[in-house]
Amino acid sequence: MKVYFMANNKILYDSKFLQLKSTKAKNGHDWFYAHRPNAKNVVVILPIIKNSQILFTIEERPPLGAEKIGKYSIAIPAGLVGDVRKDESVEDAIKTELLEEAGLIADKIEIVADKVASSPGCVSEICTIAIAYISEYNQVAEPLSDGGIIIDRELVSIDNIYSWLKQKEQDGYILTGQTLAALFYLQERT
Image 1 (tube, helix red, strand yellow):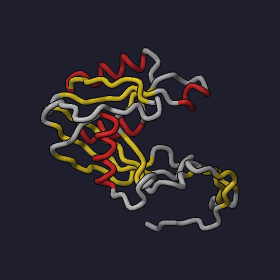
Image 2 (cartoon, one colour):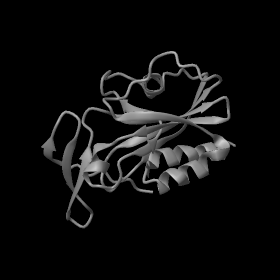
Image 3 (cartoon, one colour):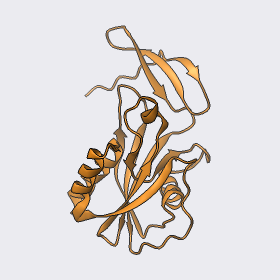
Image 4 (cartoon, helix red, strand yellow):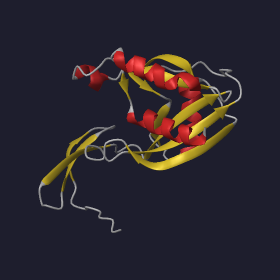
């Protein structure tokens, strides 16, 4: 399989956290996409507590509300790699985000995928998905709200995930692709 890298990128809008760029598609037309100039990856962490529960975050993401798609989304702890600490490793980012967003430390971390794109037609961002195995739900730090984005956290029994997610979806919540991808890797292990 041949991999193509397009080198004729143009920055159309530039901010500290996001750029709007264009490149040429194979047919010669302009292709527009978003790029994060301040991060080299995103980590997404599925916290499994006592091998029986998953910790989900309930988030209020401005783009969903602005477009009147939905007010809340169902997610799991996640964050940028290298946005604050330029030399940060993926493994360090996983530990940091789990502590910041859940207040938890994992007994074991398993990276299950490292090149996952959420919307490759619109963004250049890729993420690494990890499962964090936690023997006891013992918060060692007060979880952060991530600037008011995380409004709640819910522990859900692994046996009840499907019906819980379906109910949340019926209630108008948006399911994030990264969360669903992480649950796919969980299903593979159970």
